[in-house]
Image (cartoon, rainbow, N blue to C red; front, side, top):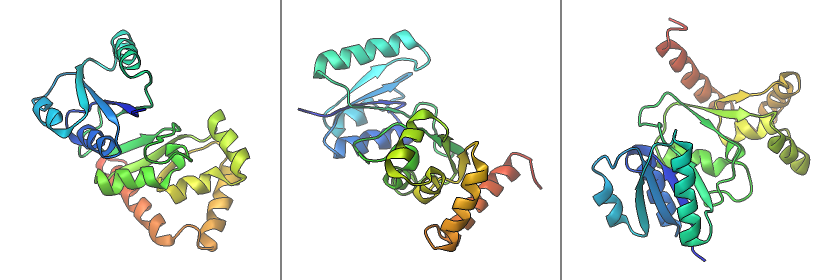
Length: 205
């Protein structure tokens, strides 16, 4: 059975690159965008994909499109919400969904392959931040792996973490640096990206 993906904002920039990535993985891809942006011809030339016009803030329209895709393919395996992410964006929040086409084992927020997709394939230079690590899905993953999720998040490539368990997480990250699990070079890269963003935002001079 053909795997299927819906990519919002899929007609240009990171969205179009995401469409290409899924197509290379053998997915039937539907690109959703507010308008075609002049890119539908390029999309049609890529392979097994379709284009649908719609506003991602219109819940009724999105539900309608998802229903159409499920009716057409019998399933919808992945929804990649790239709408609003443009080349040159300052930061990206990575959620806890599982992108099975990229990494079937770990949630995206803790996945090295997902972060490599952002850095290497999509050439994202900004700050990557996790969604809230206190969410139930991550707590369950923590129990299953018996590993500190904050350490896993840094290992994966996040620059910043959303956590309320800093009394546990900070010592765990420091220990991971001490034993070489997390490199000082990686931390320096993250700090540099964060400082650049703060400077750009006028928080530091």
